[in-house]
Length: 110
Length: 116
Image 1 (cartoon, one colour):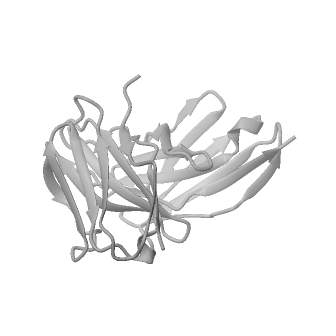
Image 2 (cartoon, rainbow over the protein chains, first blue to last red; image 1 turned 135 degrees about the vertical axis):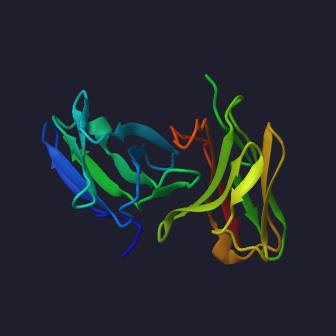
């Protein structure tokens, strides 16, 4: 099983739709979780951290399920500008590094 | 706006040539990462420095790749000799790690390498 797995998509949704992505991780000792966003031919940028209790930032909600070892990202009221690849990122803690999933592509159409 | 600066942005070279990519991390950051991104593999970690010391380069092909941080303002990634399979986008990222927690990583715009 890969360390971090994501459905590559693409997810094609109309403007205003709600869309959700899941990401599974293999190492139960993982401690920190993030969602990064990467626009086409650009660098990844932090979208939000994922906390154990779940967290929300505007239209974006991230949740962590440690028992099933997955994190999720929910986007409400999708905008055209949300079109991007969303990267799931996991850190085992200590001096270990961040492991990136291959990303899920989202395409929001008018 | 503080940002990670990478050079060159684009590089086309022939197989067998040496390639050197440079990165200036954000001032004050204590960690530097080199990642390689391809369509097939996604983002792969090549090297990781903390306080200029290499902590993890297990993802880097040692026979042809080398990564160094000669000072706090410069990180380099060298490929010698380059091969077509090295064609990818190479990202440098820096961050401020406090204790055991890895915070936000700030990525440079990447160096797009094509080896013919």
